Image (cartoon, rainbow over all chains, first blue to last red; front, side, top):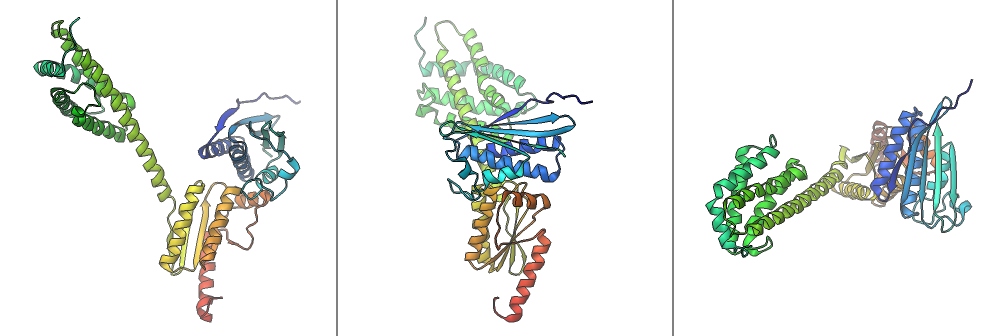
Length: 140
Length: 279
């Protein structure tokens, strides 16, 4: 007996334009992760990934938007976050996803590391067409 | 339509009906600010503003930026920044000035048609705008002050033992704060002649690559000055996140709790003393 539960809440959009917006995204993700009853480790991982991706949106994408929502799928609840910008896009995705490679001055682990921090990771980018990264983690 | 009245005429007129204007002004303002400020306080403020306004008019002032109104602007700035500090809303602050219009309408009603009081009304509008501006500036100043205080507040460097200092970090680590932490830590190391520094991150909610990078830089800087640095307060969920993220702390010493780090540092200090030479 399976019934599909409709989304329980609508997505919250947060502009990512300044450093303090990154903090706001992080807090929002943390709040929703707690509501979704993620384990403490999963909460921390998701929040950290959101922090990385929001900062990428700000630093490399020249600012953009984060969309965070609580999602339900059957008995599981989770948090999905989408980060999008209209920046220059990523010309070589494989290179960008290589540990330790950075086009800026960071550690080069933000994008590749985020992928390992969450259960679902999808990236959509093309040179000149901006970048859209979607992540999600579900309660176990 | 009558000719525009000279400032002197207006001052004369205003002095003549001062009591009427005052009472209508006070009534309107007190009604709006009921409970926020006492009547006596309002009366005193308004008396000061009215006196300064009259003085300005008598010295030939026409618009608020005239030198004749220097004193008036000073008083208004004081009043509105005081209100900003006391947590008044912008509306509550501006109403104190705009309520003067009530007094002026009263004035217009009692004077004959050959004196035009519009210059006074126009002046009140300028007073209101000026009040708003200083109010906003005062609020900005308060916010900047608080941000600065927070920066200071959140980064104390404490001496734990002879030769051991610690920085308990709390909250978000951004570039500005890390800069402050690093400077304070390095200075304290020199001032206290300490050889060991402990950076405790128990209060840092998430360690992402930026935070890690800031931490690594701080440790390297401390090492350059000859101090050994330990990072403590790494909670289980943070440890797992750091591993998944792929951050390498290399040969930097890390401990789960501040207590562990202190014991470690004390041991290292004892070994140094025993051999008589730094290891």
